[in-house]
Length: 202
Image (tube, rainbow, N blue to C red; front, side, top):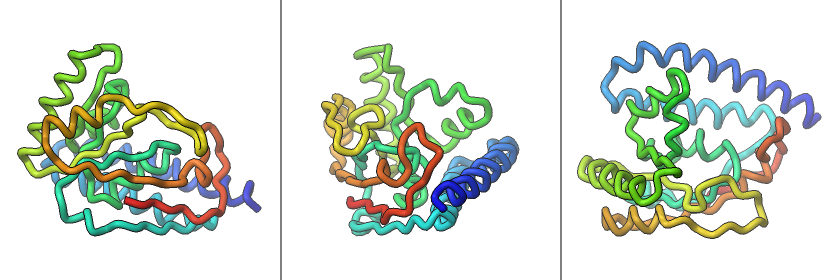
C-alpha cells in the first residue's frame, strides 16, 4: 500500500508542481507580496496532497507566527522547503545561490525575496548575507535558515554553521528553533512516503 500511495502522491505532486512552474512565468510580473502568496499556496497544496499517503501533520508553537523572527530549522527532507512557506507565512529563505539558476523557479525565488548564499565565497558571502538580512528585517520580514547548511538524516549529527549566528547578530531578531521529524516521513533520495505522524515544534 505504501508503494501505491507513494506513486499516486508523487504523480500528483510533480505534475501539479510542473503546472505551477509554468504559471510562474506571468506571475513574475506581479508585486513580490503576491508572489509570496503563490509560494504559500504551493505549500498548502502539498500539505493537502500528503493525505494521499496517509501522512497527518501536527504543529506546535503558532504563538510566533505574528512576530518577526529568525526560524532556525532542522533540515531533513524536502518537506520543510515546501510546506514551511505556507505554515510560517512565507518567511525569507536563506538558500544556496545555485537554486537561483533554475529556470523560472530561480527568478521566482528572487521575486519572493530570499537570501542567496554562495558557499564557495567564504567571508564575502557572509557579509552579503548580513546586508540582505538587514534589508529584509527593515521591511518586516521573518527569515528562515537551515543552520546545519544541508539535509541531515534523523539521528545523525552535524555541527551548526555560522550563518544563524550572523543573522542574529546583524538583525537582533529572536531565533526560534524548529524541530521536526520529516526525514522519517519523506526520506532523502527516496520516492517512498511513509504514513507517520509528522510533527513540527517551534
